[in-house]
Length: 416
Image (cartoon, rainbow, N blue to C red):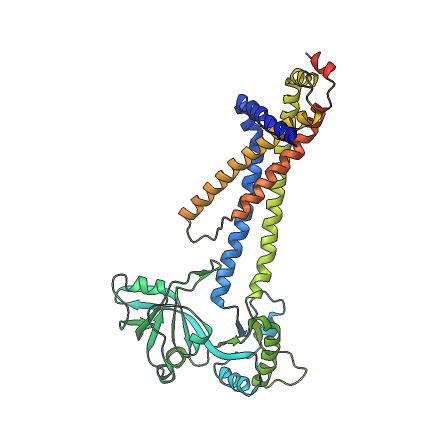
């Protein structure tokens, strides 16, 4: 065992002496591995970043909230069937809540009506266009756990009376009131005055498509008074146990059919949407990125492995007499095998470390220049990259190392 350890240490010493003596050749040999490791880490970082950004976005929707709407979130082919459906009405929420209250051990907690449209919000000369205005009830706080930067949500009295009060999204408040508190200030929404009673904390964007900070919320009665009572709505239904989502959706379908007065055999004239619909659409994109990344990574590592194998063969040829001398003096085959195998693995490890440093630098550059872009560098990627480097080194260096260990010492000493 001690002899094997000594041979191992001696092989490391010889390998690093050769790498140091041929720096440029070693760097060029490791270049393919560097590119492969960069591809591995960037692919992993991209996929993890997509997962993180997507999960953060889904958390904003709420993983315990089901959306009852006229249209599904995904694409549809028979759009005419959906277009002919009656709109979801705000008063459907009251009927649905009565059904929930009458159902023993219901998996549904509460249904909250929400209506919305895009409008401009103004304060003196300052204006924010295309703000998504939501009208809802004071129960909105039960389905959305968003924090408040300032102020509060409207209460039951304000909601039932249709008071002209409003809660602004963070970006809207920043644009209209850059240096002062917006609380108790008056803004114009669609030309109608509303008093600001709260500002939501910054929430971010949903998949880069919609900003939760570019919205404002007012009482449903006030929305209907100024912007129309017949506008289609959606119902946001909170479930009591998100681990029983399937059963809760089945209960919700039955309850909604009762509310809508549908007969047995009739097709549902509403759709239940939840965050899994977005996940189903994102999975093929992630798979495509992974397949493309694996192809690029595999090609880079293959080229790198061929380069390392070629250089190891060259190294064996250059040192054939040295191999013959060592074997004539009693060196075992495993000692020669270890020497060239460790040299190949060492070059790959150097390439792996260089690739990781380059990848981490690119990661920091992206974070510095695009802080909202979802990227995540995981320590797991370091372990994977180092493991890949070692495997590539072993696979590419074994054949030439095995050939060196099998050389006849007499033939090797006569080699010119």
